[in-house]
Length: 142
Image (tube, rainbow, N blue to C red):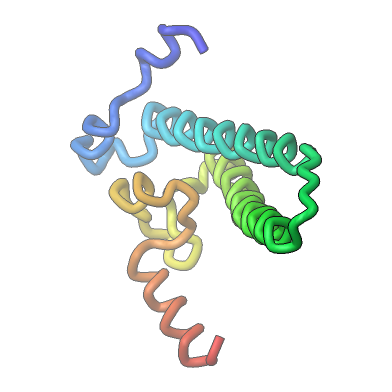
C-alpha cells in the first residue's frame, strides 16, 4: 500500500472524535475497511504458518511426547477453526461496507456506534440489541 493511501485514512482518535453527522462517512468506511483487511491478512498469515507447522513431521518414539504433540496440534487446529469463523465474519463485514449497511444494527437500523465497531469491527448489532439477543438465547437455554 502506498503512503498517500494510508495518509488519507483518519486515525482512531479522529474516528472517535468525529461528529455524529460523519457517522459511516466515506473516510470512516475506508478506515474500517483497512482495519478489517489488516485483520484478515494477519489471520491468513497465521493460518499459513499453522499449515507449514503441521506439515513438519515430528517423529518421536516416546508415547507421552507424541501425546503432547498431538494435543498441541489439536489446540492449534481449534484456534484456527475460530479464526476461520472470524475470517467469514470479516468477509461479511466487507460486503456490508460495499452495500452501505456497515455500522448499522441489523435488528433496529440504529447506529452500532464507533466505540463498539473499534472493539469489534465485525459487529452487526448495537450493544442494546446484542444484550437482548443474548438474554433471549439464555432464556431458551442455548
